[in-house]
Length: 114
Image 1 (cartoon, helix red, strand yellow):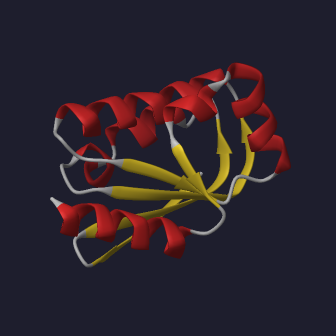
Image 2 (cartoon, one colour):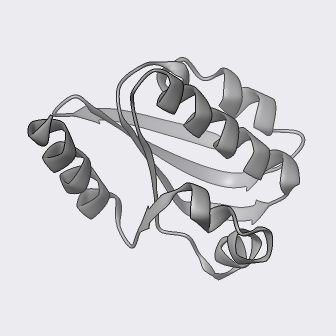
Image 3 (cartoon, helix red, strand yellow):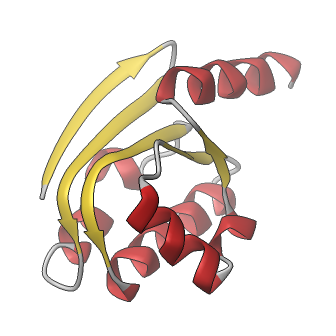
């Protein structure tokens, strides 16, 4: 799995590519950007496989962000990833957007309102 990171207007944009599974979940969970306090949008358009370990890593990141009074939004869930979220009801834990830019705009609005 590859992780591409950018920061725009104090929002981390993180794009993932490859498999998010038992062999890559720990790498994602330990990523310094994802464990930081800035709000984050995770673009999953490049994820071609997601298992329970990968889903657990995403949930863990979201919990850490919430504990730090921050947010994690997801974007671009392909059909296979969306199925995992539907089967597990994980969609209830995240705000999910069709593209990362819309998600980043929503985070900016939320931050401005505070």
